[in-house]
Length: 202
Ligand SMILES: [Zn+2]
View (tube, rainbow, N blue to C red):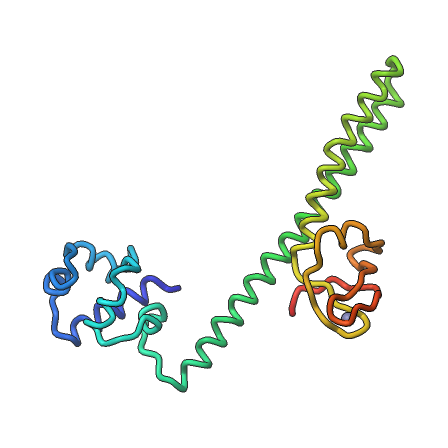
């Protein structure tokens, strides 16, 4: 949502309707400062005011959110563009999450390795050795759980049998054998078990 564009649109429609900022504010029972804030893109009209505002400006709520009057033919294209943009943003976020998963994995492994090496290198009683290794495993296990959760939620798994793309449950990801991010799971669409690849786009 482009607040500045919406602001300019409100100002333009207000002038077209023949209102000053003060007149529009009076009709809506708000201060002219609020109108000025919308028009400069510093804030959005309260959703409770939107229906009345749109009526006064002879626009639809959809026009308001888009910051322009949407003609019916344009409407589908605009909506599609918005959906594509949203999908792109999700893909980007998923990509970042999967990078983060690698960072967690590396850290968790380093901690458990460090603890094991420390326990074997330094002189210490047997129980202390176990404690050090145990202390290394706690962040390792927590790290693995977080990493697995990221892998489950980011992007989709693609069924090798039917090509269906889906987000699996945490437990099915947890129990599935895997090579890298490719997991052997049952597809919810065709119910066949296969090696499902991780993909970012649907
Ligand atoms: Zn399938």
